[in-house]
Image 1 (cartoon, one colour):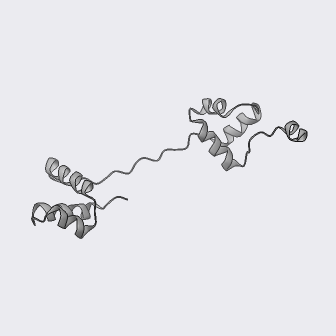
Image 2: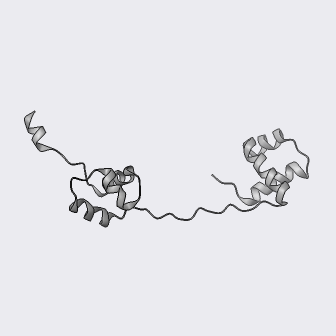
Image 3: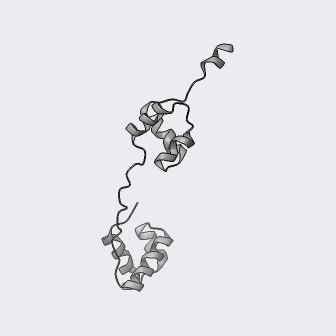
Length: 114
């Protein structure tokens, strides 16, 4: 969870201007020592605290329609073989297949022998 810019600035001001100790500030605001260290280092280097940028949205690599077409074309392909055209990890193919309701290939001949 990220802290707001206003909150981080209040914490840094307590240390720099009001001369509170680290332990007092940590107990009062309920933050961890590492966060306080990073905020103070940034404040001392730049003179201000920057707002954190959100990570850009990363679209999913596995298109369900393309995966379904590939499975219909190559029904005996392994997860590794299915992952190559999408340039992703085989577990991503497994998760997408599970979302689509596609289960693993069953070998009915082996089940009938038992």
